[in-house]
Length: 80
Image (tube, rainbow, N blue to C red):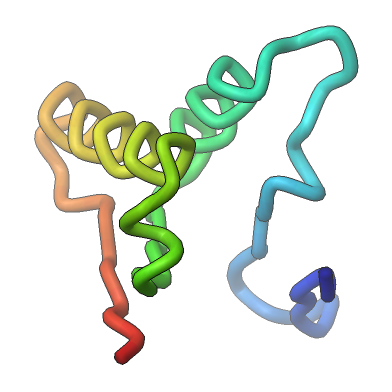
């Protein structure tokens, strides 16, 4: 898997599952932590994404965070 990156001078950061995983913490907890620390969550939605239980959890967690923060933090991109 390629690690996405931006130039050091970019006004934002990219956090993927590779950057926020903490050893000894469950995958679902790591996802929730990563989403809660993010200002925006970009979801790249593919057929495989929709079939994944983990990805469905990410969508549910991002929606929950949106409701709790009363902000629109989820940005979906649909791949066909």
